[in-house]
Length: 334
Picture 1 (cartoon, rainbow, N blue to C red):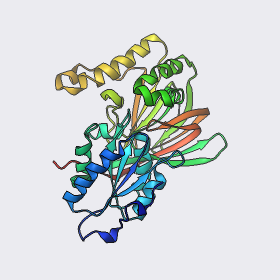
Picture 2 (picture 1 turned 60 degrees about the vertical axis):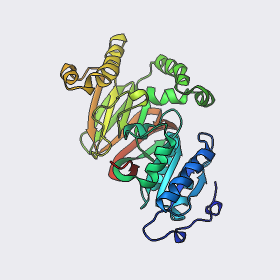
Picture 3 (picture 1 turned 180 degrees about the horizontal axis):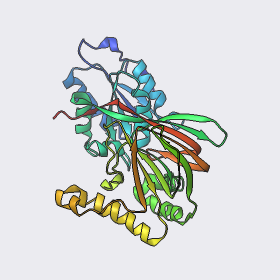
């Protein structure tokens, strides 16, 4: 990981009223020379101090780099990488006075998609980081109990998932994903669909009564849109102070057809127009949605869990809660 001496910039170098940006970047996923060129132009135009640069690594996907950036006086931390980099940086930034800016890279870019930010315009993204405005959004916090009874704590911005969602990710070859993007998931999806095992869990929403459920997939979502603009959680809003929880319960071919129609046709097409919304069906048997601020769950056996597209091993229980307005994200000026 790079240190602040890479740029010799500190908060003392900036004039009153100006800021200091830090770029936390994944060297595998970004064109560093292009980013530095765009940053230099915006930094000069904004009158900010010299930008700090911090590199992620396999050992530190972004938390340590983000903490070093904040300790060095960064007022805006730019996450340059995929969803994993963004999640790791946000995990630290949300407890500070700094704002998070996004420079999307990779195949997912889920937070950027849900905020309607530019996905492939480097100059626009960097301009937003230096000259945009801050938007308060919710962030999720989750405690995961693992097979060895250890508990790990994390943040997530988009979704926490168990079942098909997590098994698919666990079965995906990382090298193949880097080469061909989302096509790499095809084989993993087929493998996961062949798995007949169901999740069995007991859960409580907002301290309410405990319920038992069997499901193929369980997703706790802070936002609802996936890659290719697939709207999986139609009522998940990033700044409403609540999660939307989805329980996918298909039993046979007919239920899978229901899911495909509901998610891809109704949520993806009909929901986008007033006329289309009037044509939508009610909740189908294979899909159950609930909303709340906190969910606790205990699983009958260890199950793979993922956060924002990254696997976090097997969980035996978890507790997730939403922090309303817990993160400031840079968005373009209107």
